[in-house]
Length: 503
Image 1: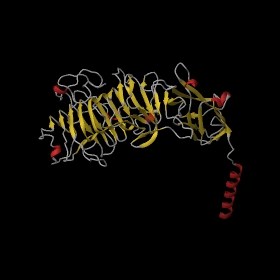
Image 2: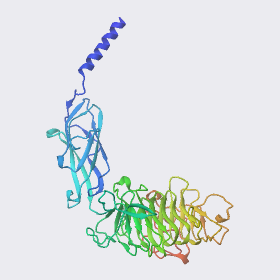
Image 3: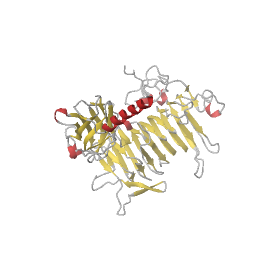
Image 4: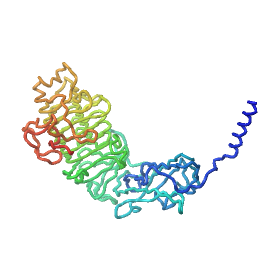
């Protein structure tokens, strides 16, 4: 009897299965649910493809349904593209009879490439809708993208299909030299604030020429791109203080991905390289983000002056200086894979009212590294004639944020005056005797938390509860801080004058 019952049950299952197919669906009735009613695709440059964004579509009914059409309102003319559950449709524009099982969902992935002429001239927004079904069952999800116009600078294409090259470190790299009279862009050695600039490859500054960046200039570097200042060439950044969080008067160097996902990812572009013998370089109010090496100095011929500048999220170094001469005031650097500031192979350095912090996720990094040697060069050592830090903060997430790599065969001169310093390890090394070695250390505040406002957001402001409050020496004061605020006396340590934090 049991055997016959089993055969009977199996027969019912087979009969049911034979009647059931993937096409046993009912038409959609306009009751779809969506993960969002508007998909914002962030800002993109004209004719540069966006990242891919997702929309989730839900069928909350008990029936398997078929959606007759999924398409853009602008049809085949839409500048958007989509895939629906892995299907590309008619050029990624129109999909027919899309099956969605009961209590299930499907993914739609959306991207765009649009020109500034496609956008609304009043607000530069390019919009469309994804339409599900039609007539009384029509449902729509809006799409919005801000298209930004820009000046594009890139290597020329040679007749054989190769790209124009320039030589850096003895190697040919994709790049070009900026021209004072380019037939398309005019004077490429003057970066204005009229439009942002997008650079592909290395943009080189020719010998005996100066590249100038006006206040408010915005420069975006594509992957593996950068700026190269040749021998006898100069860079001049003329930013000024800003009154809002938009940094409207800062000069900003960053990557060319404008989506919020990329806002703080290190290593999106290469570096600003100052070749050996570059001259008369001056930087004021620069914000540099997300490079491999922010500023890479290779023994320029005279003193570089860096003021009121911020460098964040570099995969290797914020500033890497080899046998260079730097005078720095009101500099803030944070989050670097190897060191926020690394001065190697000697040189001459003076930093006043600077905040060198490093919150990289691994403990092998430093906020400040000093060395008078360099492997692989001849001679291997070079004198460090001065490395002076006045009214500075040297801090971070590692146990020790200050590192000295000293070769006794040549000069190694350094001094820290009125600095807050993190160095938690107990050591008998004579180079790190912060309380008793008055030749190198004066009025050091050791291992006290400066209580920055928000390190994760690169906000290194302090208030009156900070250990850096009013601990500076008036003899070294820079009259205004990085924001242009007048310093009080005695001054606070670091780049910021103390203020009450926002409530």
